[in-house]
Image (tube, rainbow, N blue to C red):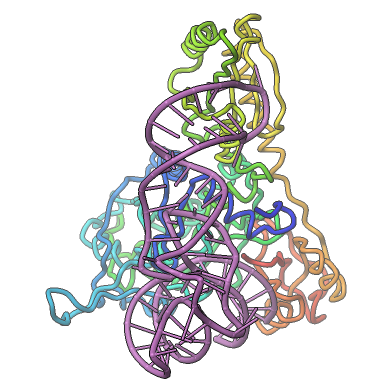
Length: 467
RNA sequence: GGGGCCGUCGUCUAGCCUGGUCCAGGAUACCAGCCUGGGGCGCUGGCGGUCCCGGGUUCAAAUCCCGGCGGCCCCA
């Protein structure tokens, strides 16, 4: 493993593999296997977001993996945006199919034909759904484990509203929900409104959550889109208003990249000793390591049993394997457990335990009388640290050479922008890959001219290198 | 989109350039037995390989050539 700072890529691959989060050796490009240590975190992520969505009135559904080709082709911008990267099933039963099927790259074209059947009155609205599934996109760029795969896990919401105002309010609600969760997980992020040419195919407006990786690069972990009537019109999703008028519904969609979130967690919190999974996302808070010595083993075993029964039920794993304590320490840090409780003859003698916390890598000896309280307090502290670690710094650039200079340092840049794609392309070329990510959510109006070309600025935008 | 590196026991790798000494060597993991135990501990024995796949060159291919599949990196 290379140290994190020197060789991020090498470090990242090493942690994912040695920490047993995922396995890239499945043998199909861009598709990985989620191992138990990765999967428990994936499950936690799903649980958290699913319960957020349910609280906000979304109902869970499950649509088929395959979409009929005619439906897939109904919204023209959408098909243009995805046609190069969809998998198509064209053969089955030993012969070519008369009508091929698309494997979902996203599920608008699966949902909307059914929405047409389910929605008929303004009383049915808002209608909010979601599903937790894998989607498939034939990425031609180099794939990276969890960051860019041809199969990835996500949650997608698909929602119908009676009017634009309700739909936009829902988008705002999505932004707040995601923001609060990302902060809680300690993932630094920006919410940006994507440039018109960079929107989701078929969207009227796209808002993206760009996580900021330790390399200074940004990684889109979620997007929410206002779709207007772009999908409800071709799919004829109509309802009757109070005045008995026919009206196409307005819709939104939110995609939460669960695979990418796992990658971002490992990337953002890990260090040269391994991963660090935030307490609320780890299936277990930690492991208990008994340390035997000489002939005092019986004493230690009895004491460990006693301590274990005092720990919050189901939150700790008692590691009774034959490995040496050092190896257990090493593995627990690699896999990113928030806490570790070490118990040997000294602890047994003094009625204490030694608590090791993963974020600071500090030990503390605690009287067992205070154990539950100490664990609770430490976990609260760790969560607070995560929040404060998620702060980000944005550097303002006024002129072209400032953009060049800041980009050389891999910093996140904010600058006035003219809104032209040609200008964005030139920035990308001259800065070695800096992209116009879009306008910060709730950004103020720009004063003056585009920092790059000098023409009238239309908005302030974020510039960053994308992973 | 363009360029580069790589693929050998479960894992990591030596061997490849310069074909034969390799029915492939080591370490680690695993199994058995000991010894230990406060940061990957040590000893003895054992198990384990279609040298990624296909084709070609050759008396002879892990090694050279072509194609495919897969992994990784860099640039745009």
